[in-house]
Image (cartoon, rainbow, N blue to C red):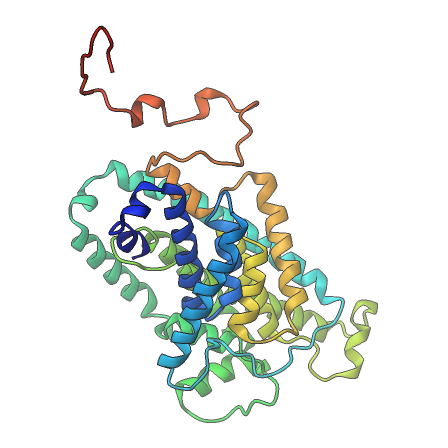
Amino acid sequence: LAFTISRLFKRFRKDEALLREVLTCACAAGVAVAFAAPIGGVLFALEECSSYYASRVLWRSFFCAAVATLVLMRTNPFFDGKLVLFEVQYDLHWFWFEIIGFAMIGAIGGLVGHLFTILNIHYQKLKAKWTFLDSHPILEVFLVIVITHIANHPIWFLKMSNNQILRSLFTSCQNVVLDGDSDSSRVTQLLCDRKSSGELIGVLSASILNKFLLTLITFGVKVPAGLFIPSLTLGACMGRLGGTFIQHLTDAYPDWLLFRECDSTSACVDGAIYAIVGAAAVLAGVTQVSLSLCVVMIELTGGLSHLLPVVVAVLSANMVTNPLGSPSIYDSIVHVNRYPYLDVNIDLDIQKASEFELRAKDIMRTNLHVSNGSKITV
């Protein structure tokens, strides 16, 4: 939208640098509206959308993000007067021994994000070779809808939308009432009743596999299927599953020196904080962002008690993916589509020329128009 509007003005058509600044501001505003996170949107534009970020663009991006958020608040899209999508109602208390669990979930989330990026690259290359789907986009969308319906139907937990799943996974089990026959009561009983732990492990395991495969085939289709929310849902299911295992461990071995901190409370491990940590870890592994993601998660949930666990998980995810040389999903799509793009992270002194798939003749024209002057060829 920003590019289309900017091309209407001569100043932006003639100045590519100024046009990129407009696109950066638009990116900040878009993230701010999508997640009600104005500060996170500015940091995301700084971290992911710009190779060179002029200082003057910072306040312009922040202005655009703030105005966009104010308009969002005025329109009241959720009909509750709130901007926080997945508000955490309680302070999620955690113990220091859980830092190990947060780091492990972060590392696993980074590996999952790396695997997702690699498989998505191969899937996009396979689709590029099989031109039938590209020439029939409506059929591709229809097949994705049918596959999604067939895959989600057997699992009652996945019949809810991603937003509903995230909201339930981010809900703490503190002071909950386990009664009622509604769908929300059934979800609460599944997540918080210790007697349903076997069913919970089965449902979350099936949901992880389901969300991973469906996100793999839906990202890149001809309709905007999204990446942030599906990745958050995948990570939240994974994190809640990890929290369930740690909870069983503390229940089975309460006398361990590591778990001595739990003596003062009846609920030692809260699965909600592990869901938030897992969601941040997987998204960090897929998008390769760090600082902006931590801020977005805090603004998304409206709480500060889980800031340090999120930071630990995001750092662990990046520490795992960086040695593997995993690119972000956005850079991968750029390379798969063979767009002219020079990665600032490539060391040109040691990079072999044969490793570059894009050559100069691939982006140059051969049918040049030549004007002959007085013994000078222009």
